[in-house]
Image 1 (cartoon, rainbow, N blue to C red):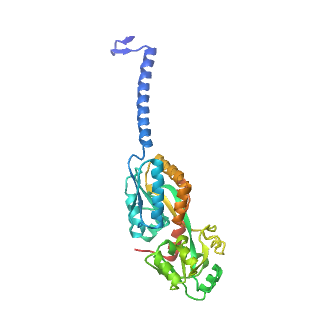
Image 2: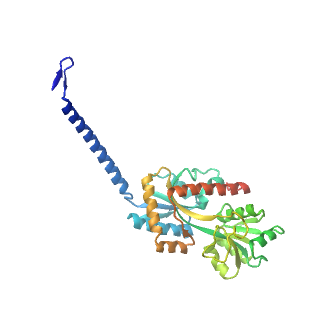
Image 3: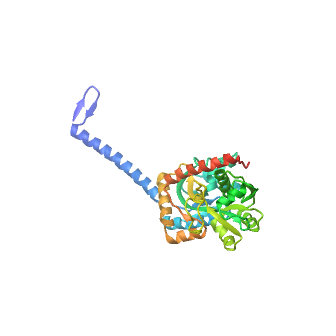
Amino acid sequence: MQTDQRFGIVALPPCRAMAASLRRWLACSLAGLAMGCAGQAAMAAYPERPVHLIVPFAAGGFTDIAARVLAQELSNQLKQPFVVENRAGAGSTLGTDYVAKSDPDGYTLALISSNHVTSHYLYKNLSYDPLKSFTPIAKVADSPYVLLINANLPVNNVSELVQLAKTKTLNLGSSGNGSTQHLMGALFMSKTGIKLSHVPYRGSAQAMQDLAAGFVETSFAAISNSLANLQAGKIKALGVTSKQRSPYLPDVPSLDEAGVTGYDAVVWLALVGPAGMDPAVVDQLNRAAQAGLSKPEARKALAAAGVDVRLSSPKELADYMVQEEKLWGDVIRDINLNID
């Protein structure tokens, strides 16, 4: 040991100084490791309590049914209850607004539908951004719609319908202004250059009823909602909106196949949370959704609700939502649609 008389400092020999330094480094490292392990343990413990899955639609619809299938599978995978909560209203914006303002801790999620990405075009005072205010977790399912006509309309294919619409006024029934049915019809008009007179109803059931009765000549609707009237011969299917044919209507061509080049649109469902969620929690939820919805019984349950399982990574969903926002934004601007 050496002492510097000028400053009264005791200097340790090099070997002892190195040992002291090593002890300090080891103590710091162990403390850091303990903190890291605690953080990993907390992350691995998610979820530690029930998770709320918000459905921004009324109970009983296909989104609600799909949410309950998803919630059960997530509960099975992650060993905590996933509780479905319906918060309907204002075109699904009430429920999604609630989720956007929730803590991004993974305990409040939403199952959104295609109309989520169009909400900011339709509602002037929307308090959230449909893309920036949410964390994409996983695409869950999708399904095409089908172009339908009243059975008494003297046409049998898309080409004949387009020709008829150029010579007389035809009505297009939908479940309301800005609804998926409305926008599917608007995209069809944009790609064919025809005009159909839009007749908005208060819901898809009433629109289907009037189509079958002949009060409106055309409509776009979910395949599951169309089968009964198709089988009864009250309506005819001319084309499905997806690029490929639907296994539920194998004899009906896609609209693209029927001559409406480039028509490719589906209604989709996706799991999202508030912006700023922990990527590790997002990955855990995505893996749980993938595992749960890959099971045959889950696929069968969703098929009964009228949708097919379509799974994605968080990045794939984020990119898809951007594409969908552009597609339907262009349609809405083209028809100058605004709800409030």
